[in-house]
Length: 210
Ligand SMILES: NC(=O)c1ccc[n+]([C@@H]2O[C@H](COP(=O)([O-])OP(=O)(O)OC[C@H]3O[C@@H](n4cnc5c(N)ncnc54)[C@H](OP(=O)(O)O)[C@@H]3O)[C@@H](O)[C@H]2O)c1
Image 1 (tube, rainbow, N blue to C red):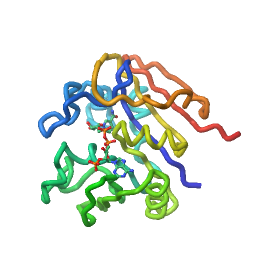
Image 2 (cartoon, protein in one colour):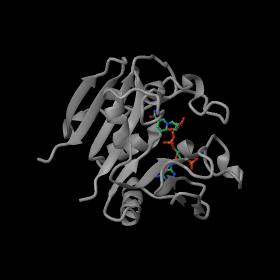
Image 3 (tube, helix red, strand yellow):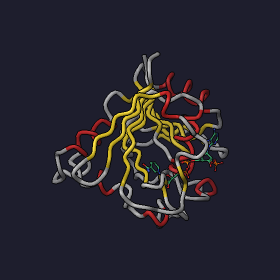
Image 4 (cartoon, rainbow, N blue to C red):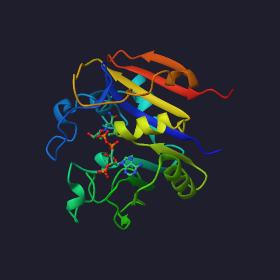
């Protein structure tokens, strides 16, 4: 059965998954790279990086994934849809290597990139988007890639089977918060935590089967 998974989704102690304001120069706003420094120090990102607890989690991001769903604000900075040449942040060969479904109210024709990457632009409910992504995933799992709004919407709709969340010991104070409106969401999941020597805490939320 194809599952819906989230990996390496990083939040501050106060629950923000990005800072503000988001821009071309600062995709995570005032958070800079602080939410993801833990990941950039692992071997899965940098061949000279660490091979410890953080890497063991980080490298679970790719295997078994057949499609990704992401939000419009992950795909580009505010106003990207007004630029017909905007093709995402990731250069000619993005790191997904699957179909990617960008949820947006500003749809455009599919964008085929190198390395098996095709961006599809979709205006749809989370359930409809998941059905479309599943059909494209060829029996594999679908990853919800963020940002915060899209992850929150999929959690609220009860569509997430597995979520790996990383709490980073910083306080952002402002940005886009993951948990708003999700009171009690943890009740549907078995939750495990592992504290890493790097200072981050890994949470896995696995949907209860009964
Ligand atoms: N912390 C992490 O691990 C992590 C991971 C990934 C991304 N990020 C960061 O998170 C930030 C983006 O998060 P965000 O919460 O601002 O935005 P987001 O979740 O990326 O995108 C939200 C936007 O997507 C569009 N959208 C969402 N649902 C839709 C639907 N059902 N139908 C049509 N359009 C829909 C809307 O944009 P329009 O109306 O404009 O089309 C909406 O404003 C970025 O800074 C990104 O770098 C963080």
